[in-house]
Length: 280
Ligand SMILES: [Fe+2]
Image (cartoon, rainbow, N blue to C red; front, top):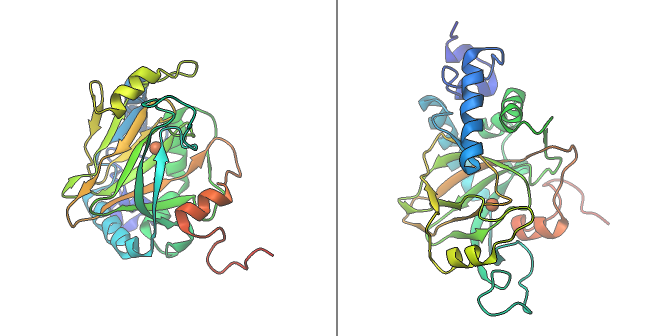
C-alpha cells in the first residue's frame, strides 16, 4: 500500500515509488523497472530512468542543487578522447592526438550539507541495491573518496565536456536542471570494442560526422545508468544563463575506490577533505 510521502524516511520521499518501488525489491514493479533498464543498457549502453524523482522530489533536489552550485571548483583543461596525454607521435588527425576542452565546476561530496537531499539519495542503500540489480555486476560499493564519491557537476554558459571514453565501466547520474540550449549528452554507442579501437569511426565523429550519434535529451528527474568505456560521448557546449546541473553518484564493484591526487587536484583544486589536516 502506498504511504504518504511525509511518512517516508529520508531519501525515499524524493523518489516516484509507484514507478520505481525501491522499498519493495520483491514486487513486480521492481522487476519491471529493473528489466526495462537492463533492456535499454543492452540496446545502447545507456538506461534512462525517466521520472525517477517525483515532481515534489525534483523540486527539493533542484533547490538543494542551486543552494550548493556556488561551492564548486572551476576547472578548464584540455582533454583527450582516452583521458590520457595526447600522443604527439600519432599522425595528424589521429584520435590519440586529438584534444578538446573540459570546462565545468564540480562540488565535491565533502561540501554537501549533512541534511542535503542529494547527499541523502547517494547515501541511501535502497538506491545502491537498485543500481546493483540493474547492472548485474555483483555487489556495488560507494566510493571511499570523500571528494569524488558524490559530485554536483555545474556547467555554465560556454562550458562543455569533450568527446571521450570513460575509464570506468559505468557511471550513474541524476539530471537536475537543463540549460536553455546545448548541454546535450551525445553518445556514439559501442563505437569501439575491447579488442578493436576503430580509430576511423572515432575520427569521423571527432571530425563532426555524427551519423550514429544519439542525443539523449536532458530530462530533469531522470536517473541515468551509462556504460561509457566503449561508447564515445560528450556534453555539447552549454548556452544561456541557466546552469546545467547533474549529480554524479560514484559506485564501484570493488570497495575502497578512490581517485588519484592528480585527478583531485585538477577537479577540486585540493586533495584533502575540508577540515582535514594537510598531509605532512
Ligand atoms: Fe564520461
